[in-house]
Image (cartoon, rainbow, N blue to C red):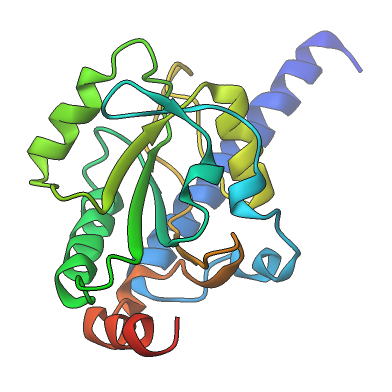
Length: 206
């Protein structure tokens, strides 16, 4: 392939991928069937067994296996996204309010799709920004190779923030992981999120 045509090919392919991902994000927010839904049927890795070290908002490194034995609600967001990510956090906070606090059996894990391991104070600021508090919440970050393993396992599209012309284009997902690390339910169309019904399911069936 002629070099000039090769560059044009990769540019066109990247442009089409951005358009497809952006359209999928739009459909996810609007509540339509998005183009990522078909691939969610595939077998995914056990969440607690995905390798890698994760830094929490206290600056400590942990593994996902540390959440084993608890029911975990997992979401993946960007630090500064102003579109769907704040909506995801709002949904989780409503769930935190509506679910049973007596058993202390749930954890809410927010994974930031950025490598912030050099500055964990940013995660603490993130919790203050969204008034996230309580022992049930954890904010995590990791290096990009670990993020790639997680997102690849669960068919989640995201972009590395250092890329030129960066836009907050990513797959929306809220996953409900049981005590053994298996995803029992997931939501990718955010407009289908009903806090009261999901909280009832969590309290009685999850």
